[in-house]
Image (cartoon, rainbow, N blue to C red; front, top):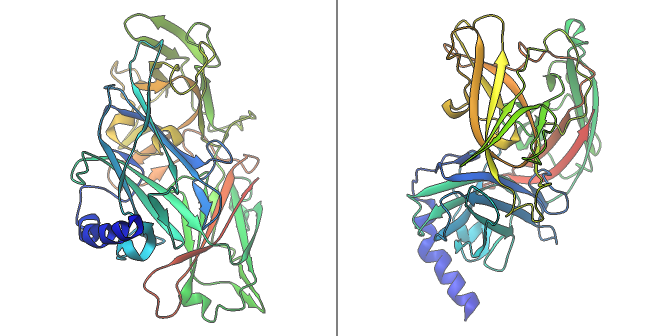
Length: 416
């Protein structure tokens, strides 16, 4: 009876789920009281949110609601194409059982100045489970109403039917050899793919950064059982510099990069002023943009870690012309939104921004955005050096002739 009810629910709610909603197709938080969204493969904290189809692997998804109490949060997942457009499939075509469910696991914070409720979810589960591979968007909404968006979160389900080889080399373009990293990709066991230029897409991403992704459709070489993507001018990335980082695991003792801590009705943390690092490679250990919730003042990291108003400071020594400066990292999904833009309020080229962040260790960097063209510049303030350690992700998509959707048939990750 439960399976029959699930089938009927898929049919009845199919049009409801696919209807136009105010959700975007990117990692995004829609409500200001929602903070610290995390999504990763449970096998490794803060790993890429990739799981294998019909395996024991699961995704961990969680977030905090700073208004506290308990709320009626619901969720669904929607299948997408390789370029993150809805694939147009009905939920019954890509989901087992139900098409939406309520988030029922939550805990209240304790021993913190900032009260909040911590919600968590594990996918797949008995209520919602994907049955085909591909890109998926997790949608969280209030009171079962898709017109009340809370969070959208990308994740991947892969059906690994081929092997992916990767190598990181200096750029093959002579002027860029000291600043760029070139990613060569080889696909093996590709005998069943008859028309790779039309049916296969290879997406290479640097450090999980959405706007640092390159899509290649045409292989540079085709061999029996192998496709090579080694064109000299593709998958060539500015290497950047190592990420900056700060440590607020304790709000009693100053951690790395912390200049001052003030404890009052709310915790306030001021970071030391940053300077541009354009002319030098900074040899430090980083987490390639990740952040980790940690707490040295309490026991439970998820519910006893407090929040603090963290002030970033950037001393540019000169003004910006037709550019805006942002602080980015995985903690804010690298989004160049007004909430993450630094401002020169004193008029002396000293830019500041205050963000509410949970206790832990954070990687971050500064990027510029051209106010006219919208172009993103990651190197003017940070520099770019081949020696930089970066992680690279490769996603391989395949659309069978006559099929209506793209499958994710290969995934791999490597670091330089």
